[in-house]
Image 1 (cartoon, rainbow, N blue to C red):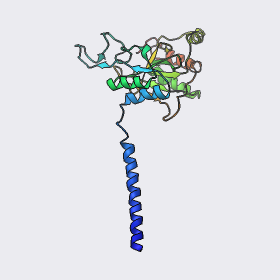
Image 2 (image 1 turned 180 degrees about the vertical axis):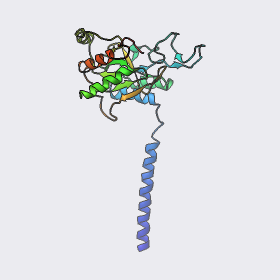
Image 3 (image 1 turned 45 degrees about the horizontal axis):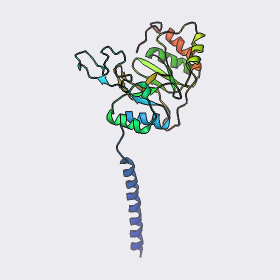
Image 4 (image 1 turned 90 degrees about the vertical axis):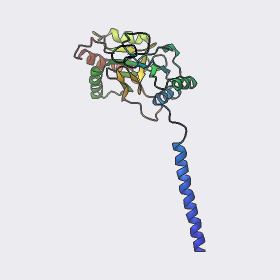
Length: 243
């Protein structure tokens, strides 16, 4: 009797272990791992309702006889290689999950381009050195930041949508706005991580919280003073665009 009860407990225990392993196996085997760009594009489009589209990819070094990497677009002197839309154009940006899957299934390495403005985030970008200085100042002022995108040459701060009229009134009050400070509103775009462009890898300097709802975005007027000041105090006085 003891032996029979013991064997029954053993069998139940083994079933529990096997069931646990099976559940873990199914979690690991739950479909193929998605390419990183597709994963980000789907999160933006399907979860956050931010319109995206694929960017043009980089051209390998020497593909047309030039030195270094270039852009796959027709412009031989493209100043933002691999960091802009081409075909389709930015107006094709969408939140449609099926279209997003189709694009990145066919071009898994394509950069993820966020179309700014409208109901989507806008952005303010500045050269990388000025961007690091601006973030330090904003943190010193204890101002809350949203997501910040960083490339080797420029940093972009995502902000709440603004209109051209709002931006015009805001900048009109400034004595000086450096030409290196760029505003990405309606009709603009920003390349998102983990895209790789001709300038190098794009990454999050301040990443959206994982598993959160649509990322919180600050209003542009709360940040612009620090961004203008950091650009003016850059080594070149904020005059270089620094793509």
